[in-house]
Length: 383
Ligand code: NAD
Image 1 (cartoon, rainbow, N blue to C red):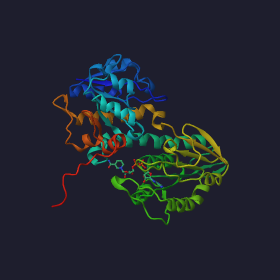
Image 2: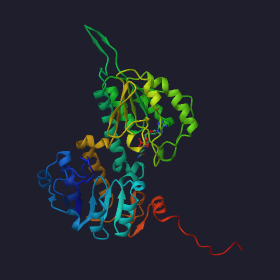
Image 3: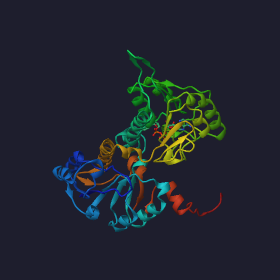
Image 4: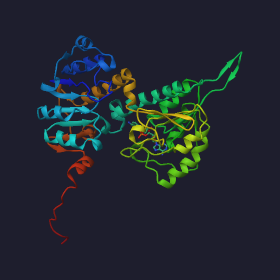
């Protein structure tokens, strides 16, 4: 049975779904691995490395594959050429990909979305949202340090003492905590805030200061945050304003699953920052935590440079690909029995991440968005 590694077509995508180092894990499971020529180029893996690792390098590797793996979903024209019954594993942002999901359904493709892998302990090794957030969080702190034209750490020299930079991180999930840890390692004084109660302890365990606001916490389901009401959002902004005005670098990473990123910082608040300040908004692609931030752009708002993140994990393609590939290998391993691809649809990880299977959209919110609510037929009244 063949697993195909697709070459990414999204502009600026440098990651690859399988690195040469992990080819052996799939061949040991009983698969052959076929890689699209040049698939690893963006993450600096040459075709020869895949060959040496035991893969084939062939044009259109999906032709005879049971499984096609990629970072981003395959394009519709490729999907339409896949034999029915082929499975795909990739990120698949269902809300923004309804036409593609319709094609996957109509072509009888079984599609799995990495962002739908349930966040349960057994699935941690398959959690690509976490692995890519880790990369993005690290990168956000490095970008802030690079843009800021002063030291992060305290420097005590014969010529005098230079005080450390103050970094504020908003949103202390996977990316935010990694930003906190990285800024701390670089020597900055770090403060962070998150709406979830559990986050304060995690922030402190990194040696940073947890900003405490007199506001109710917002726990949602599955360890995620809930959306704020506009009134709470306004109170949060008012209470955070002095912390932001005092920061040399502000890094924002806040998100609520399935929603636009919460607006945490207005342009007015950025204008209160000192000359030379830096803002890094990791949520710029999903609406932005910072008013005016644009994905892939560095803008000036007041005295600050505002950097908007765009596909940030792809800016560190080596580790991002390595971690993503390990997530993929772990998921494929779960779906393999006796050397063959045989997903168990009674397993909550398999069912939870499945979007389409055998001509049906199995992810209910996507099915409703695509096909409308299920029709119910009245079979009689209460007797
Ligand atoms: P995420 O990317 O959805 O959100 C990032 C952070 O933004 C979260 O910490 C959230 O609380 C915060 N946030 C949302 N609204 C905010 C606001 N208005 N102001 C400030 N912060 C706000 O979340 P994530 O980083 O992917 O995960 C969040 C948490 O989920 C983790 O810290 C962890 O506790 C849990 N988690 C569990 C597992 C698992 O069990 N397998 C895996 C990953 C994450």
